[in-house]
Length: 474
Image (cartoon, rainbow, N blue to C red):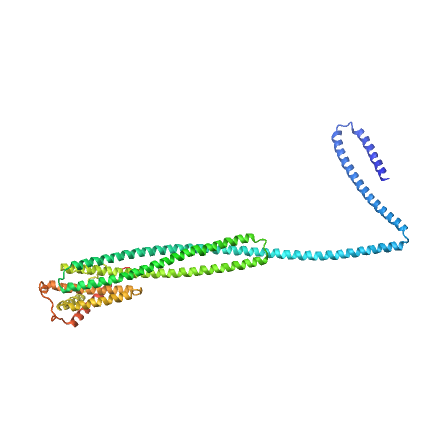
């Protein structure tokens, strides 16, 4: 019925359109209007046809439902009674409801489990993100510490190189000083061998030079032992430097590289493995920090040792300058003794200003007192013994750098006073002429020792006050 009505409506519209088409066919705008109208009609026809098809499908579904209901009623008619049929249907529906209720409870439980698992996964993901962020911050901090440690290692290497250069320069300087001392000793030995014994004064001078030569030779093993000590300390510094370069800091860099690779590969590990690895890394970092602190303490210790070596170096330089001065004075004194002319033993550095008139009179009076007393061999031997005691005291106290400068100045003052005293004693025979050379000292010719000591002490005090004004140049 529906199909026949649909066909009639379609034919009716077709005839109406054919009449309109015949009327408009003769107009000039027919082509464009016909084309547009045809498209619109075609679209409307498609829509109407689609609606009819949907309606036909709905009717077919209703037809199937009605057929099923009809078959059900026909089967119900075949049964004994309707009550049993409805009771069976109700029981079936109740069973179905129970099954659906159980399914609903099961689905609710599954929903709760799924929600709980979702929350767990969300928490785990959040914790994982926080943990990764902490690992990233820790890695950045360790990278900064590694850079600082490498910079510190570079600074220590540069400092150790400078110290090594200083030690090498000091060692070369000590070798040169030892060679100069040996040269001076050889020259003095040759002079002593070639010089004849002319008088007791020259004999005392030779004995003093021999004593000083023996003291200088005694000082040579001490200097050599100190050089050996410096060499051993330098070897220890080089070994410690090599140890730091090979063990400490490359191990730290490899550890940081291993930490970086393990951090890139640890995205799929569990929380427990992360905790264990972090604990292990923390222990390794702590061990490395302890090693670095120990190395820093050792380097600081060696730095203090090097500073002490610099102090020893300064003290040895002062001692060498003192020995050079003594050797030069001895050389000048020997030359003057051989030539028979007095020599001024003060250098231009320690040359005092012009003395006052009162000081000049004091010096002149002291020189006259000393010249009025006859020299004797016993005084020279006492002076040599006193020199030996002072030099042995200098040798025993050579390891105290605080008193080195004071002892150097005191020794210089004392040597200058003794040299001036001997020069004044030598001037007296030249003034008297050949009378002093012809006379030889006998055992009965003994001067007054108290007068000699008093005059000598007076001259030493005067000269020490004059020299004390001038400071030693640095």
